[in-house]
Amino acid sequence: MNAAPHSRTLILGIDTSCDDTGVGVVELAGGRVRVLANRVWSQTVHAQYGGVMPELASREHVERIDAVMADALAEAGVTVDELGAVAATSGPGLVGALLVGLMYGKGVAQALGVPFHATHHLEGHIFAAASEAELAPPFLALVVSGGHTHLFDVPREGEYVLVGATKDDAAGEAFDKIARLSGLGYPGGPAIAEAALTGNADAVPFKEPLQGQKGFDFSFSGLKTAALLAHRAGASAPDLAASFQKAAVHTLVKTTRRAAEATGRDTVVVSGGVAANRALREAFAGTGLRVVFPGRGLNTDNGAMIALAGAAAITAGRAPGTLAEGAEAYAPLAALAPQA
Image (cartoon, rainbow, N blue to C red; front, top):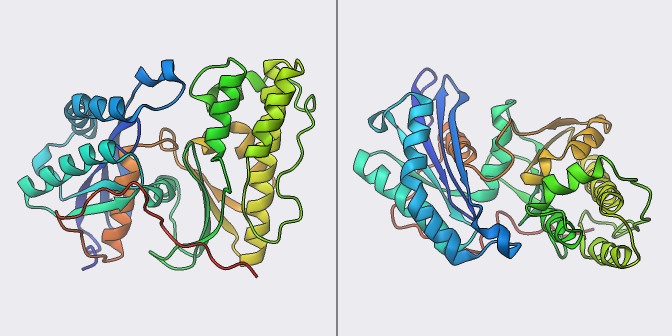
């Protein structure tokens, strides 16, 4: 059943898909959504390994989720008894980490007797942009993060067509690996962006990936290899960062723009951790498209985006899930559309 036009529902969102413990609260009222709270505990234990250690991530979620939940409710100024629905990420992600938030969310929903929505992580990223603008299909959605580089066409509510994806590394993964190679630290996205400010973006002549392709896929392994060779040849960290960022931004924007022209879409949602990159935002601003980015704090993994996806499901009248739904490490949001 669709949400009543003037009703008010408070939705709790939980995301523990990787190394961030996220809990958010969203208000759905009169068909509009408003983020009341978004609290995230970002795990730092993984920095010494240069990547996420799954078992450590699960333990950190268990230890922190109660406190993050309490902080989110306090920020929203509500009590747990006021919640009208719960949404939690069911996949994709690290299974052990996913189970922490999924079981926690189920417990809250069962204790309160409210609907529970098992939510797809990528749908959460897409609807993170609903914090900034009303999202009504049709539109394109580029989800670009450490684990994902996917381009979806969204022709109708709840329908996703994968028109392009990375053939190898995700964009954010490439940022992380090149930052590590250059000694810039982890996570790589902010480190690369900071170093690029003082670098020469034309110092390393990266070749454009997948030139001449008919489809809308992405590839970053070639850029990664070229960065390794440039590093061995003596390229400075700032120059390497600036040149790689320029090449990565170019391929993301060019491919998305071609897809928009092919599908006739004039609105593009760009979300995920890499969407916080200033150079990427500036490049998209010059495309002539209506480009919607998530609000502050909603680019990386968080609970508010899951609550926003839950609000979209409620508004559309989608039936809630059951307490029997499990975590899925591999959970495609859509199958790849056939290329002409």
